[in-house]
Length: 231
Image 1 (cartoon, rainbow, N blue to C red):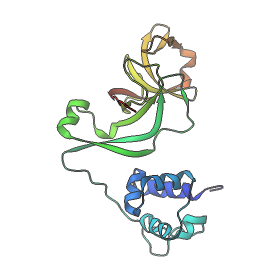
Image 2 (tube, rainbow, N blue to C red; image 1 turned 45 degrees about the horizontal axis):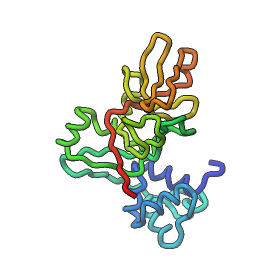
Image 3 (spheres, rainbow, N blue to C red; image 1 turned 180 degrees about the horizontal axis):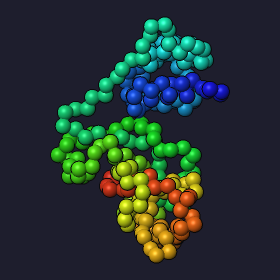
Image 4 (cartoon, helix red, strand yellow; image 1 turned 135 degrees about the vertical axis):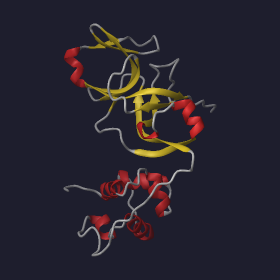
């Protein structure tokens, strides 16, 4: 692939091996999550012992990681198989590397799918919060902006049911509109979908039928977790 970086190769191989988040790879290599995040973003590159440990964890040649020199693996070298095990009676929710705007929108160019960590609940607690929704359909996203203030504050985490990637009745949704990622209330009206903010400082606006091609619903918000800061 032209212009492919070492970060691109690390990320692609991690996903190929179904290591779903950077913390998982960091644990296998014996480095911090921040280090893996910086590698994948191209801010730094692994060198020396860390490069060799990373290549071993990913089951690839260090030369391929560094500069794309083929072959990717030595003859007879098989990709490793990792099984991610949760504690018994646990419910694991993926935390995404994304922010949804409770404001005028955040420009986004890719699908929201990068997992950076996870939150683990005991099944009994998960049943209270999520009902019978499977953990695989839940994602956590951080909110920025004040347009939903009173319900969702900036910095709060929202739990999104990504199986509801369509309008499923009036409620709070995470969606993209004309390239911006937002969290707002959507309400059905005869003229189209009314986009509403809980903060009265923000005016309602309408997505009419002729603009529906610009709307992509990513999921429905089913739970929020407030973050209180004291400093």
